[in-house]
Image (cartoon, rainbow, N blue to C red; front, side, top):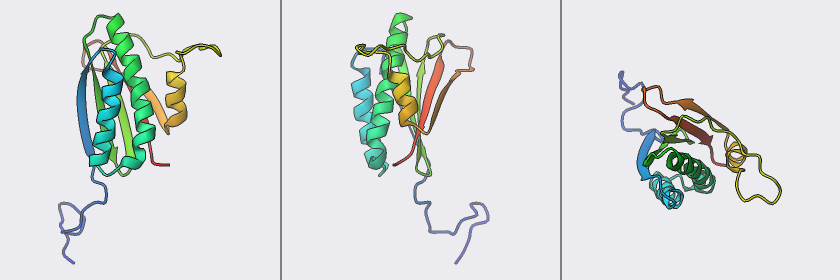
Amino acid sequence: MTTSTAAGRPIGHHHPHPPARAVLDLGAVPTAPSCARAWTRQVLWEWRSADLSDTAELIVSELTTNAMLTSRREGRSFIRLTLNLDQGELAILVRDFCHSTPQPGNAGADDENGRGLFLVQAMSDRSGWYPTGDDTPGKVVWAVARPE
């Protein structure tokens, strides 16, 4: 079998799941979370990773809802959703343009809101956030999911 010195892998053989990346810019409007879920489902289907879809859609929904709400409060018009798939692990990143730090809500038993970040933490392998680092306002909130 011939090997390529540049790649270090046999020629003619492909990595079973090559790294993939997709980016979607969304308006900070109430329909953003449902659009983000549908887009995520389609992207994962195209990447032949539909087994991640249920978990990914829930995480995407929660993160884009939070980003949409905070962006609207700040008068910012859009958010960015990025999906990175590498070796079966899906990183979901949502960038908003708000200075506020993501804080889990203090939801009571009858509250309909305030549980999103708790759900993200429960459904993901790991999650967190970081400032954009490019001198623009905002942050990236992220979570990593794997097939069950």
